[in-house]
Image 1 (cartoon, helix red, strand yellow):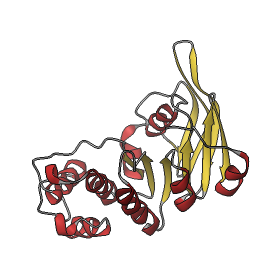
Image 2 (cartoon, helix red, strand yellow):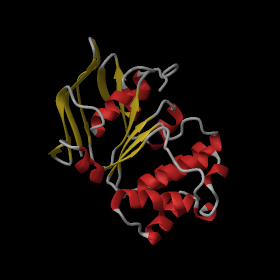
Image 3 (spheres, rainbow, N blue to C red):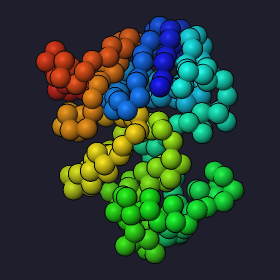
Length: 224
């Protein structure tokens, strides 16, 4: 589904990603883990084509990713901070982003997506009155509306209280037929929903099954 070969990125003389190769197979849920400053954001932005690749190659669904337009049809991205419109309702926000992406919105699809994240009853509330957990679920709904097979989620539970985190994880567990790369530093959520871990450390990346990673790596102190 996603194949990364020899990815190298640097800022000035500082190498951030050093000859990284990684394969994420269909239907895997892979956690991206590393300390602060390890290069997780650089890795995600490289994968999405938001920054130019200095060296290496990225293939999505067997095709080399060459431009931003193509990956937008194949990969849906939820940034850590999703810029929503507080003066609009939840339903108006999802319609706005649907129209921004394709020029039109499917009202039934928008309803079903809001229902899938538990926000249909709050569809007519202005999101300035939403809790942070509700805002994260709305951001996830907008991402899911795109209906891409590949989801890139950057800290989707960051700063949310335990109940909000539980709600997000329940939504992610309910998804089927999706390949997910999930940036996280929460060991408990990695254990709950992930199948694999891509551990980024000192510019190098190693992929493990969750079970093997838990056996060999002490995650205490690892931050986003």
